[in-house]
Image (cartoon, rainbow, N blue to C red; front, side, top):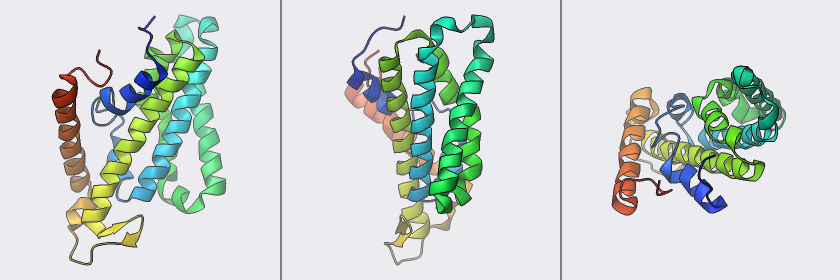
Length: 207
């Protein structure tokens, strides 16, 4: 059993201590592919929050009846099921965004971050704690994508959420994959600095 933490500690850990993009450096594909603008980054983050929370809750609810030898295919089936739900929901109610990021919504099935939390946390903890862990990890992912999208859209397009903000010549490199890697690298360094400066290099969770 993982050491019990409060709901706030679990959420804070997902945002800072074990941030999927900036601290753990996993599931990096969407951090480059969908962050040329804040809007797409936001919708992708919301989709991941939903899937992460529901997968954690589902795995926790049936953790005692899952045989260890078949846990991996069971986890993948659960993930695929919830990804299908959010995929069809966005296709029905958020068509403009879905046209641009629909492929990446479907790829959430293969996100290492989703499976990792099911394996490491949800399969060993109660539903409430698992839900809070999923919420924290999801919010951390959302925050990371939105921050990356903010800088890339502002500097690369001179706009935010599709609305022009800066009328000078934009830095087109920022909306290219190279610019995405630059943005991720600088923000990752910033998060590491926060960890060292305020948490002594132990992460926001203090563990």
